[in-house]
Image (cartoon, rainbow, N blue to C red; front, side):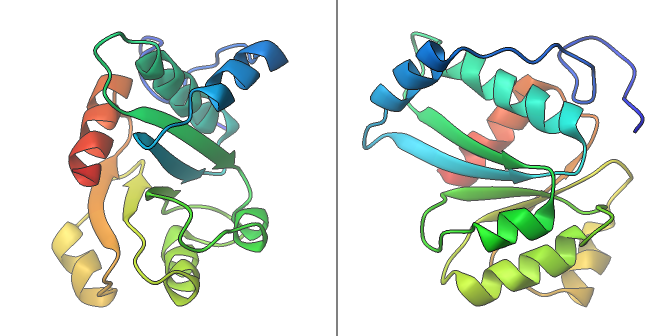
Length: 162
């Protein structure tokens, strides 16, 4: 798999994966009515890891009014088999995945969930108008082009959740 070039704030950089059970438990305890649950489905392990770390950092900010709880999958088939309808506030899906592309995954989610909010991500330019015309969907609300900084991704997610 290839990574994006740039600094550690951009998706796609290799960052060592270490998270203690204690930190995970502290995050679980912080769940509140202001918690927003996000499902990430991207075949690139580096990207899902970087997104999770970015949102964990956002959770630690003192002025943060929303707490994010993320579930990440690198296999869309597994994500689909473990999907819980009406559970996630937002679903971030990579368009280009080998086992099932993001559009097919989105269509299957739309059959399982009444009102999902979906953001599609792509490492290439997205022709949003053509995509919306080819795949009209009640749930696809935003399109994100990678690479994207964590700050911009968090901002897009917050805007979508408002």
